[in-house]
Length: 274
Image 1 (spheres, rainbow, N blue to C red):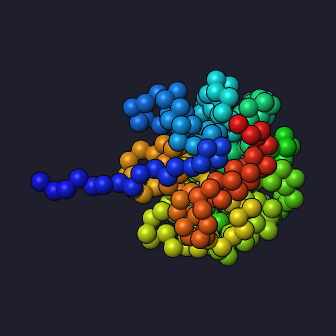
Image 2: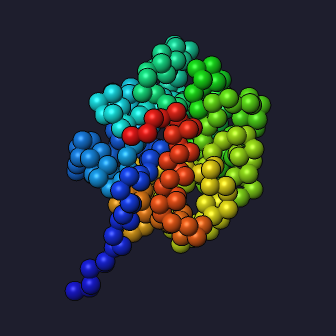
């Protein structure tokens, strides 16, 4: 019988220091625990606030419902590129109304995904651009998804700039050159658990070299679980491993990463300290 794999313990933050999971899908986590337990475990581990993200009308409404039940949870509203074929003109009226909830802190996730292409590229482009305009209208920061479509994503953002409410390139998957283009738009970079993977050299360089005041952290739970739990369902508390890796890359403490990324997230999303 082989030896049981010994996993590194979850990093422990000092009392009074916490992190924010800026991108999570609480309604999609099927870990065996209910949402109350997931949030409680996260809080006990030092994840003080969570932003749960909409990817279609139904999940956007669920995100708001969850956020309204928990003081530490906030929501976003938006239609993911996989789901834009369902959009109609009346959908935009409904999306705009949802944005007025006091628990909605951003518009997204929206963008382009030319890998899986659940929707044709022309349809994705149309509704991505239209949602960017809506986000500016309602005055919310943007949460952008980009897979194999970075040039197109940036082209539309540049054409609609400036963005007074800023935004974030969620689950960043580009290199340092792309990161600098994103920063030039006034956006932040969000680092997911992928940064803990040995082969993620480009992302590790980004996490190491961009200004610390332009960086936030996320899980994208239940997806993209960091080492040492890669392959399992992701949950918010695992973001401490991501923070630990970013700290190691930058040669600073986990506490410093926690303080900075929490401050950055609270400013971007206008979230009060918890």
